[in-house]
Image (tube, rainbow, N blue to C red; front, side):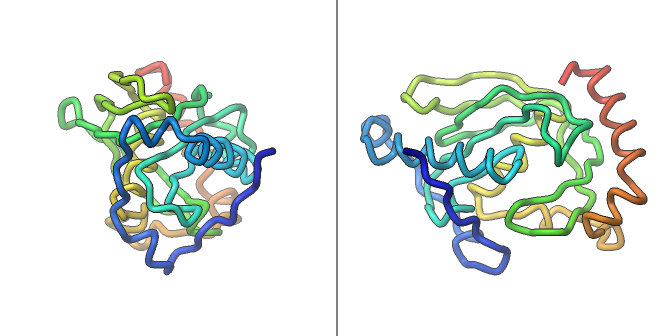
Length: 192
């Protein structure tokens, strides 16, 4: 039976500490496998696009990513369920795009951040198998957001212009249409 875990809110120290890497042996334990299932269940229950272990009080280098017709992000392309263990992201080139981001640990607030258009991903999957992939566009932005969590960073740290910060309602009212159009252009270019 999967548990829905409590999500840490901004200000708690666990969000600011770099997380601990896991060994392939640790991944094989029932405890870690159950935690991954609980992390996925919690992300889905909260309609998140991703969730990092330290967002549920566990300082482990694990994150879950998934977008399936998400009501919080109806304009975003789907991303299949992906579990990243000990991820390392490497930008491909220097091109970046502006992205309005929010976070389950920073409720009711969104702001503009710069994200790399393409990144190489090196990680383990939940069973310890290597992942070596290149992701682009909005998918790349989602990966960068979640891996930032594992390094003790929040999207707030990447907001260069504090006047871009808005509540969820004001994002919907004043910015969503433009963001949706920008995402469509990004998806047309990168396919994700």
